[in-house]
Length: 120
Image 1 (cartoon, one colour):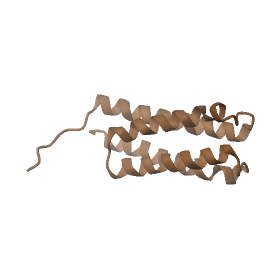
Image 2: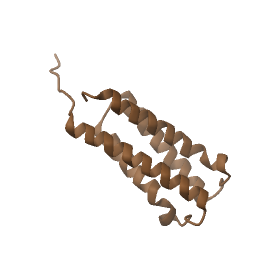
Image 3: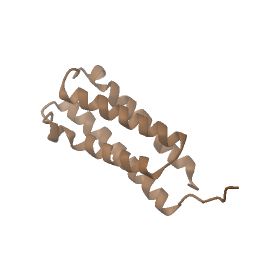
């Protein structure tokens, strides 16, 4: 990707968001609930995908980040923890941010595809 530094910023932001989502049940006191389990799993997946994208960019990582971000965004209603306002707010904000960052990276990729080099 020609504009690799911007993509790297998005990946670092996703890493931070994933780590924040992972620790949010302990910080905000909603541990031991469905919301906490969802935050832990989604946070780990987001962080691992961000680390993988930082190590070696691949389009599939951004598509997975988009899917996980959208899942995190809608999970309060799907899993039924929308009444827990703190957990729901964190899930919606982090999910929307991850999905937007993934969409931005996909957009950058489509407008500036990586240059192929001939290997010898």
